[in-house]
Length: 165
Ligand code: ZN
Picture 1 (cartoon, rainbow, N blue to C red):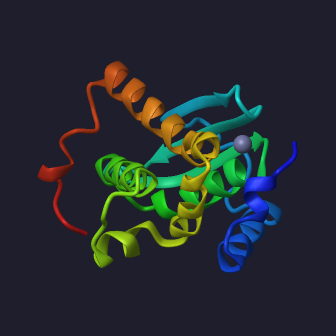
Picture 2 (cartoon, rainbow, N blue to C red):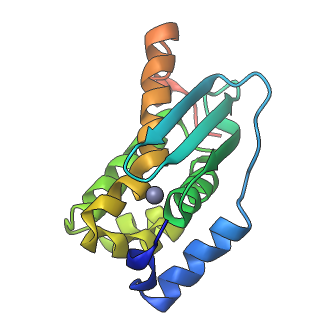
Picture 3 (tube, rainbow, N blue to C red):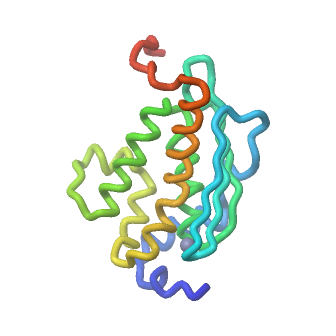
């Protein structure tokens, strides 16, 4: 599709997004995922399929995604996989909430921005409301997958009781 909003992004942001779009991290399916979900953004035709494998401590041991669509949606999915790897499901959801706040233009602390890592590069799209859905698609897909996992297993909420590594 015509990606005019992308062209208006800051050069540095464009570079980060294009890097992830052209060289997606953790691309592919994970065998026997504990958490899996698919998201679709009808406004843009973006699709993201996520799979997460959890270790004995309910942390994300491996994560993979497949998808198609615009550079913003696919870069966001790629960055997500890097950020969420090694995290608990609670931590993953916290990141998702932080990103939503960033997209709404809410003030984040330096520490919070740092936790979002390369996702910061996607904040420029908030000037283009229709593209916010592209940026959030992978994260909404992750949230759906986690909710479904909890509903099915009743697990994933007791991370506070697990001992530190
Ligand atoms: Zn899109």
